[in-house]
Image (cartoon, rainbow, N blue to C red):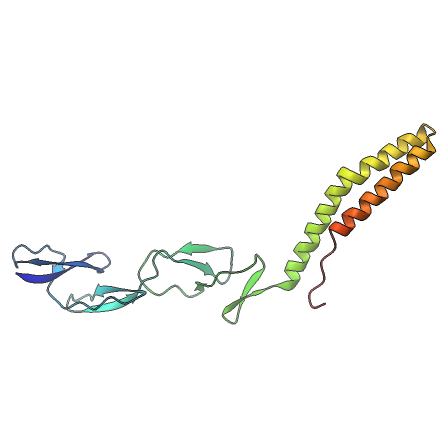
Amino acid sequence: MNKYLIFNETTREVTGSIESTKWNAPRNAIQIETLPDKEGFAVIVNKALTACKYVADFRGEKIYNTANMIDSKTVSDLSEIETGWTFEVPTTAFDKWINNEWVTDEQALFEAQIIKVDDTRRSLYSSMSDPLISESTIERLKGNEAAATELENQAIAASEKIRTENPWPSAPGV
């Protein structure tokens, strides 16, 4: 009985070993020395099927495109990751790859925060302040000045509360 390495015929990755006679060994079995297991690497057989070597094994790992941080994928092949990709996870939707690290584009983040606050305020004004102003106009048209003034005061208080609870963000570098 001889010891044979079993390898994947497509990737040439060593998948195990068997003991067999020369005549009973499968086609994808060779009689060479293997390398010991090594973290982060797979053992593959060279093209000549005469020796083993290590190849980076990041299969199943998620990588991110450094040119477009929204683009990500899971590594499925044995090898180093492609140029322009990284294992580093971006921390915000406004990150850019600069000097081999994700850096937040503070200006873009600030602009997005401004838009968010503006949208929130407009929505709240529309649902809270605007109806009170409309009601005050109706009351005034009916000649009920006191009720109109009270509704306007409520609208002003609601607007102030909206602004207090939804302040503008600070500009970058301030």
